[in-house]
Amino acid sequence: MPLRLLLRGLPVLLSLAALGLLVEHLQLFSLFGPDWLEREIRGPGGRGALGFVALATLAISVGVPRQVVAFAAGYAFGLVQGTLLALLATLLSCIATFYYARLFGRALIAPRLSGRIARVDAFVREHPFSMTLLIRLLPAGHNLSTNLAAGLSSVAALPFVLGSALGYIPQTVVFALVGSGVGVDPFWHLALGVTLFIVSSALGLYLYRRMRSGRVYDEDLECELAADETPPR
Image 1 (tube, rainbow, N blue to C red):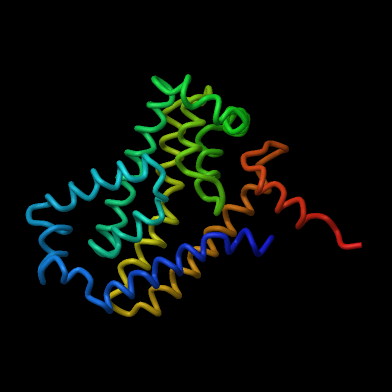
Image 2 (image 1 turned 30 degrees about the vertical axis):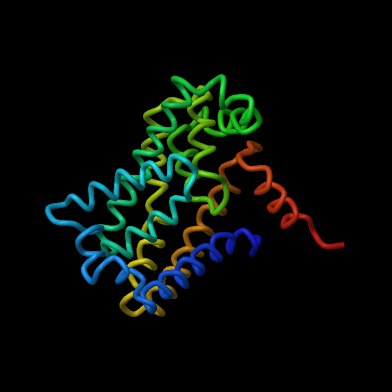
């Protein structure tokens, strides 16, 4: 199993943790008042949560990595609520971008994603739920372009969305866990997050190798796997 693929998401995880610790140490939120985080992010009566989901859905829909949103949700709302809110935002973005591509985006998007459309279509066509779940478990690939390519392909909407919903869970939990630990026990939250990330990525890569059956989802991923499978001379 190529180590570089397993560690692909770790720089993002570590940099977000470092940024969160810096924000916490410098008390940057105090620039907006001592109760800014409680008032504006968490918010009374759930308004902050709803506002977060709306903004996060928009952010992911224009290309912000879903892992960044999960970290921010964990930081603002804690592990459990942050995970649920980040999952909701990520799933809403998945649905929105999928249907945008399917209903309105052919002229604008198809020329830019022609190769990925063909790969996604071939990869998930026979088993759309399980293969979409597999895609989401991988430490590779781009969430937004996958959603758009699937929308332009012949993939059925329901299994794609359900497979995505389940496959989003591991990384969302990991990044929300690290975000939630910025203010309390950051070392143990980060250590556990790194461990869980490596385990979930290894599982995704293992399943990809077992189930791909000659199909290709990500060309860079295939190059890494091919290099790893080539015996030394």
